[in-house]
Image 1 (cartoon, rainbow, N blue to C red):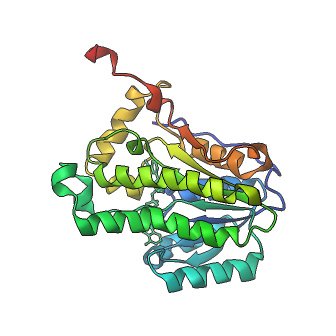
Image 2: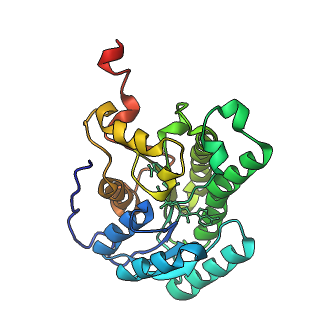
Length: 268
Ligand SMILES: NC(=O)c1ccc[n+]([C@@H]2O[C@H](COP(=O)([O-])OP(=O)(O)OC[C@H]3O[C@@H](n4cnc5c(N)ncnc54)[C@H](O)[C@@H]3O)[C@@H](O)[C@H]2O)c1
């Protein structure tokens, strides 16, 4: 199990306004990040899919956030959500995109056999285009610069069992981060991604064998532990605050060191 810990409370984000997209339930990485941002004084708007409203809305409110329903596949829904952000917060200092989705058949077995045209388009639309779209909209609300970040996974760099289509989507997402960082740098808007280790969320449960992958990941990591959502939130805090002011176009691994490990000893 991950060693859970509390990041210290403080005023690192006092006076900063942020939008966090992708809250589903209390296990969501978006919620872990929202809790830490709020504990450091940030003022938040938090989006969720309408189908998750019963759980997500009270969670957003529990950290003092403005809850906003938003479906990233629907332009009208994005228009309405960002209009509400602008009306309520005026400007933004940071935006966190924590959204991904692929059809279940795209996340099992043979990547070559199981990847379909529709499945390919769907995964790229929800997991990558939504980031570009949200970035464009958020940047317009950042007249004084800001910080934008998304969540990625090691499957972008290495073929992982069953991660299949989502690995392709995450590779595209990481490339999009660099292109956006280049575009928005002159406006003092930084764009980064956190490559998180496996965390038990609804998204992980959607990957065939996801729970087994999570169970084994501590043993495969350098630190011999799972990734705590609090440490992903700690990285988000660094990226969103002035502490991270020279970091852009970066993919920061927060995964207990699993990304740089060679094969386990018993295979050598
Ligand atoms: N859990 C992990 O092990 C892990 C590891 C690395 C990266 N990530 C990434 O972290 C991000 C957050 O995932 P999570 O693990 O917190 O799981 P999660 O299921 O809690 O969050 C995913 C969110 O995406 C939202 N979403 C899906 N389709 C949407 C749509 N059309 N419109 C709006 N929102 C939509 C879901 O409603 C949900 O809130 C994802 O990008 C995921 O790939 C997760």
